[in-house]
Length: 87
Image (cartoon, rainbow, N blue to C red; front, side, top):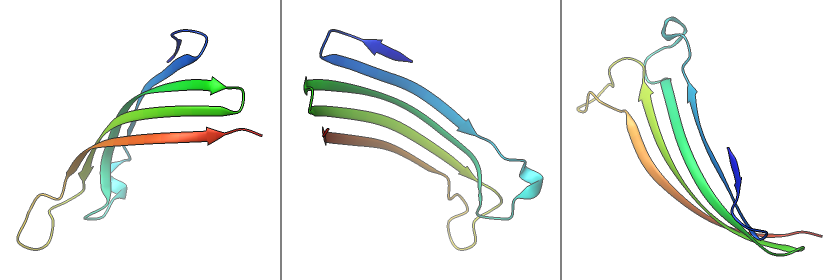
C-alpha cells in the first residue's frame, strides 16, 4: 500500500509470506518466512530523499535442529535508514 501524506512525505506498507511445500524441504531449510514493513520517505528536493523503514521478520525452519537447541526459528525487528541522491 502506498500513502501520500503531503507533497514531500510518502509511505509504503506491506507484508509477505513465503511458504514452500514442506515435503520438498530437508532439515534446517526455511519452511515459512513472514515479513511486514512500513516506511516513511521525505523528498527533500528533486535530487535528495531521506527515509526510515521498520520491518518485522519471522522465519520457521524444517525439522529439528541438530545440537543442544531443538528450536532454530528466528524472529527479528529490523530498522533501516536511507539517503538517496538522484541524478
